[in-house]
Length: 401
Image (cartoon, rainbow, N blue to C red):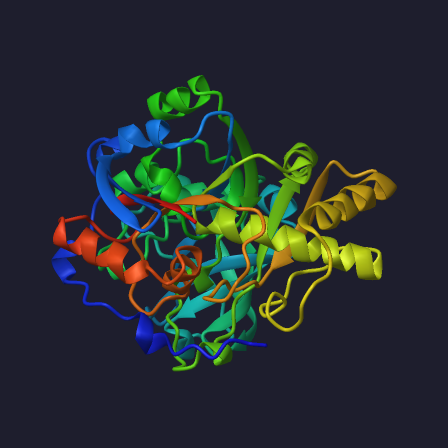
């Protein structure tokens, strides 16, 4: 049964000055809130390894933010911002980033009403010759409200990844209320980012440094990676009072066979770094159910966890995924998820989560509430009273179920 949840019940007062507009000088100098058994305490992020159990499993999202925001001009002089969301042709991220001469993406278009059918030229106010020599132009293929399908073409033989690196900017969250700066190219990216495709950082990972990761390894904790590309929907506010009317966006993810095998074995305590890792790991059960019932995994729909009861154990579902991969001779699984995690969700894999502090009335507040059994307000009141910094460049928390 789809839960009847009103988003206004998940509001809190967030003063503008508590939103961290810039990162701290040192990544791991941030504060760390620890929630366990209903108790809340304050720490420094460098203490995280001491708070984790030995011989457990820690899962990171290795997605990489791409400079997906491009600025163009019409011949009339009008400025049009184009924000790349996901590839259309080629449809696979790696192939699209490797494409030369042209590719097509689904995009958010700023000032969309002023873009007719003409070609847009890249905005290059400083006359940068390297940028000008690429000759990047954009053509509108189709439009739907503020989004559209855009064909990019350029003169030289550089792959589209290089085009973005030279011509685009990092799309920092709109609530920072500033333009991207040079510091964002480095700091709005995790140290372990590897797979290009996100338009927003998995911000829980921004606090990790090599010394913290080394301490985690020294404690015998098994570090594993997955990849979920964060879409622009992560910035979209909930505009409906009842959460059942809020549509979740699809996000693609990839998970490797060794991690699935470790999860299938059971008995290991799992810490997910970030809500993106939580959503990916918890989606695996429903992908396994699809294997058991239909012979193959399918994208996980938004309300799949709530519309019926499931007779399968977590081990059965994960084994079904591994059996499917055996049959298809696959070493990694690529799917998409629209899963929404709200109070009433049954967690099957994740035991603890590292996450930042999220916007009022957001789906991420609902996820936190579900994870801590409704105790989210105690956590957020503590953070506000103790001068924690909020949102993407803010402080962190370790939450235990």
